[in-house]
Image (cartoon, rainbow, N blue to C red; front, side, top):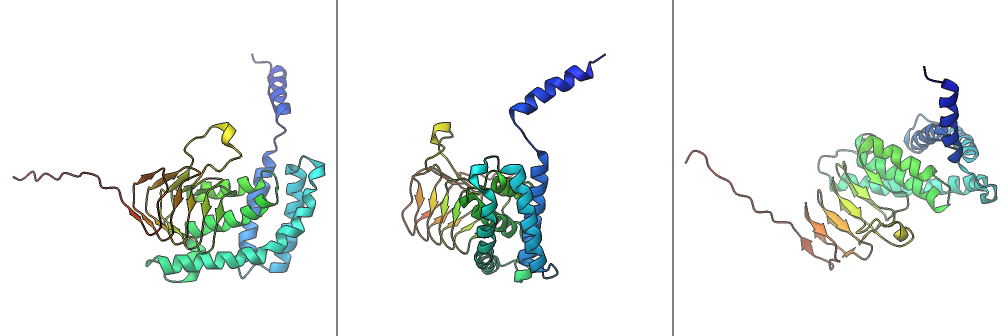
Length: 263
């Protein structure tokens, strides 16, 4: 018969090494949902919502800010003051999706049903916290959205105005990726690193996408020195590890053979 006391002591010994609270994950998910409602839901009172956001923030500080000298509590006021600016950028994103997707009919449809817009919205809200050096929470926010949409955007990525994600499932955007203005990308696109060596953690590992670039489905673009020039088109299923000059078109041309079995 198993000795439950010995088993519990063994488990607790490992827990002491990493003081993990799963409650933090739950609080961050509630915080993320609340932010979206406060910014977009007309039936959610903005003033009451902001007060609730503040309360959630205090709870996250207690759970995630392990270094008192970091003064995480002071971050809240700065973050809240950024919300109108973030909301303005998100309206530009929604309008870019409406303009870029012939299947979209209204902005309401984009806000309510487009996973690409939702992923970008939470990315922008997480990115603001990432820039304020709030520990762990921004990553939990974007991973929460990743689990819902299949779109993986690291909160450290830098994304400009009027960003359009169409469909979106399987998109991966790395921590040091830079995406300029009016860029459109489709499902399965990876903006990744050529190497995942740990010693590269503090250098630029992911590509730069200049203004008005379109990247079609399942394209893979790798490397911190790789730059995709302005107004270029990257076709589906392409694999790119070198820079592309502006106004370029890059396409993958597989050899397809069709046999007529009737002859």
